Image 1 (cartoon, rainbow, N blue to C red):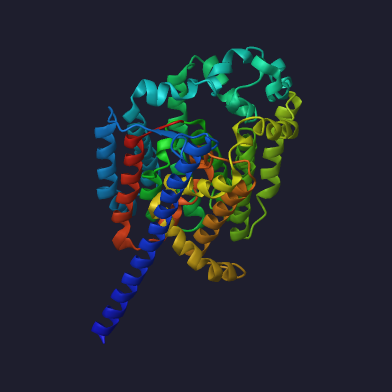
Image 2 (cartoon, rainbow, N blue to C red):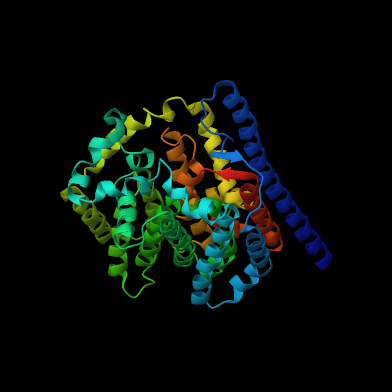
Length: 461
């Protein structure tokens, strides 16, 4: 009898492993197809406007000062990450996750050297630091902000990234400059430090929403994510962290697992408001927030969340910036640039290939488990006391829905390897559903992918 049960369990484990490998292979095939088809289109017409489709990158095999550190961090996380995540005291795990992610991100960024990989990233012609002096007088700059979004203003038009975001994005770097932390180096340090804190925020959210074992299983995958290539350094990594902390305050407020749920809800609202004024597209984070409230069956935090969000909106509105006018003009500016020629028919699925790259094959395999578990999980959602895995499934599905909404909108053609970092973060915990016996193998696949990207390509952000 025991032998028969063991044989059945072994057979089931093999079936699961084969299915996971097939899902990962499908993800790899999607990326390969996007590379081949994209290269053909780019060589024929040039209208993809990227050098190594589907990524905004160039072929550039190289080593750098961060290479030894990147390999060392990868080996340490693969070897010791899962057992440490299981055994560390909870606060110790949260506190360790952030510096571990920071070490991984710093080492990857330093493969390109400090000057090129960190200090120079946010100083290019498209970036925020190029317009710092235009904000010497904040009042007029904010009141006139929307007047410089469209290209017909010539040299007075905002560069692409400033025009493409509400003013909180550029004001972050103006603020750093005002306190004596100006220049590309401090901007890069800011983005890496804040961006990697998203790991701690995700762990807090997962524990409050699902349970502690689920959060612990997800921790190594959050740390060793290929997305770290773009967190170090792009401002979108910083945006992802702000959005993540909004959810990290919302979740314990909804589950009443914090001593001060009202303060947590208000803080979540303030951070949601800031998120919306960092990037127009991040209003879609509301889908993930709604899923959290749905799963927890609680709307108690909602009034304070809305109050906090409204307070941020009121500050910017009273300062003279209209969010809705800015977004309207952004749509027009978007089609004044390369979006007018980038083909939707390629990018609507090429963007998904970018998502595979930033989340890794382990996440693709985890998403297979999420999609397989989705129908029964959604049915059980009608009843109280849903299991931790069901709650994780709903969270990941909400992140996937936000990402697909951004994709279908047509406002995300290319460069989604950085733009979608705030959504991709919440796909990574799907790897917590992978069988324990194979987790180190999947972690290895994550690390190898990130190392190959940063050693074979020069990424644009």
